[in-house]
Length: 181
Ligand SMILES: [Fe+2]
Image (cartoon, rainbow, N blue to C red; front, top):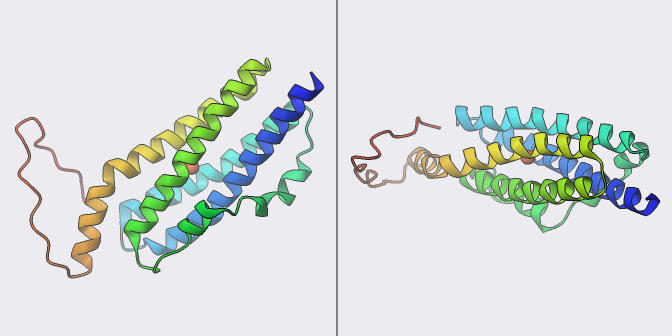
């Protein structure tokens, strides 16, 4: 039982470090996408959610008897190639910013799916439930980004003054076009 708890606590701390890195990335990206009001708002909203995720993970760690003071020491731990990618590129490259955050959301989705399975396996339903709530917000963010990526790209290119062909005519089953980003 003690071993099960220590594995779960470690994974929750790792997830906390991942969210802390996400907060730092989103903070940078929010200012990068100022000229794209909907994307800017979506990043700002998810930044707020990301801060809440850390608080909820603290609660989970606390709930199963872990020490939350250690999570702060681990913030720098999550600094691999994903974070490097998310903070690279030219300052005004909004398309790269959207792709990078989408990639990070996929990492978060996989992490929470594994955490939910572990919490279920170790008889921690409250932890599983909290992770499911967080997972739903990560999936929503990932879906929004991928659904809007084509429009973000067109808006970015038109702001760059690059001539682009008009998008193809929608088929009769898809007359609605997304609002501008
Ligand atoms: Fe996220």
